[in-house]
Amino acid sequence: MATGPPRDRLREALSRYLETPASRSLASLGVSAGLLTALGFLVTVCAACLAGMGLLLAAGLVFLAGGAMDLLDGALARATGRVTTSGALLDSVADRLGEGALFVGIGVNTVLADRETGGLVAMVVVLLLALLFSQMVSYIRARAEGLGVPCRVGLATRTERVVLLSLGLILQGAGLDPALLVTVSAVALLSIYTVVQRFVHVRRQLKG
Figure (cartoon, rainbow, N blue to C red):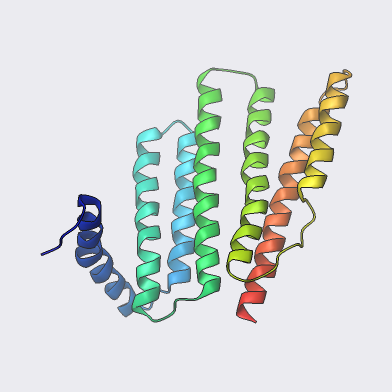
């Protein structure tokens, strides 16, 4: 019988009665851990879209399904003997992006629920995207270095982001509208590009 704190007993029960049987079934169907991670991420993005549309109950259920997939991908990797550092990177990045996407959806729904203008909606969306992906730029580097891979590549490092945001604030403050929306959008787009750039770089290094 399991002993220890209730949280550990619950975790052990989930592993024994849910993760292990489900991962064995998925392995028998030829499903890979990487595929399950990707599907879980797509499901989470769908939950974010539902949240943005105001369908919060559906968003909660779909997000829970995505979380279940995330729970199983590690168990599936262990069951198939395919635990890799590149897989760990993919799982971590997908988790952060999926959670961030949900925050974006919630933010969009909050603004729309207040019947605000389209310009404000656009600003909220790009602000959330800039926040999410600028954090991901730093996260991927930290995660990569934790896996033993140097990661200094990237177009939109903190220096570039600081310059763009400062420029936008200055121009907007001087009355040049919509300078801030443009520069925040640029930060968001460049950060997305840098996240992809760093992710591809680190994956190649880990596989190499």
